[in-house]
Amino acid sequence: MGNNKKKRWTNKKTPKDIKDIIGIIYFSICVAIFAYIAIGVPILLYMLKKYGTKTEAVITSNTSTWLHRWTTSCYLYEYYVDDKTYDGNSLVEEGDVSKIGTTIQILYLNWLPWFNRPIYYWDD
Image (cartoon, rainbow, N blue to C red):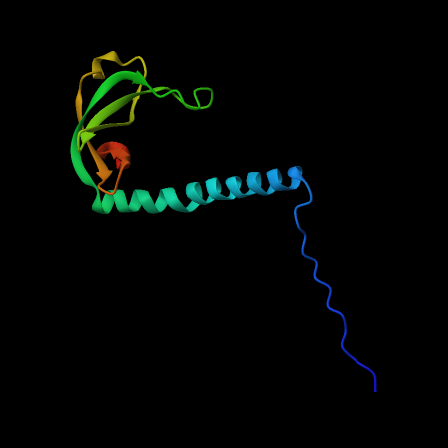
C-alpha cells in the first residue's frame, strides 16, 4: 500500500517587492478611513449627543480650509479643556462677520476632546 496523502498546496502570496508592500499599506489605510467614516463617526456622534460635556466656545475669524473646493467655508470656534485649545466647525458660513466673537454652546467628549460639535448641529 502506498502513501495516499495528497500534497496540500497553499496559495499564500508573500510580498515580492516594494510595490506589493506599498499596495498593502495603501489598501489598509483606505479600509481604516472607510471604517472610521462609516462606523466610527456615527458611533462617536451618538456618544457625543448622549454623554458629551457641554461648554462654551467662541466663534473666531479663522475658517475651515479642508476640502474648500467641495464644501462651504465656515468659521471655526475655539474652546479650552485642561489648558489646551481645541477648535471645531461652527457651521456659520464665511462672510457672516456679525457672528465672529459670538459665544455658542458645544459638546465634546471628555476622553476625546478634539471630537466636538455645536449643540445646534442636531437641529433640523
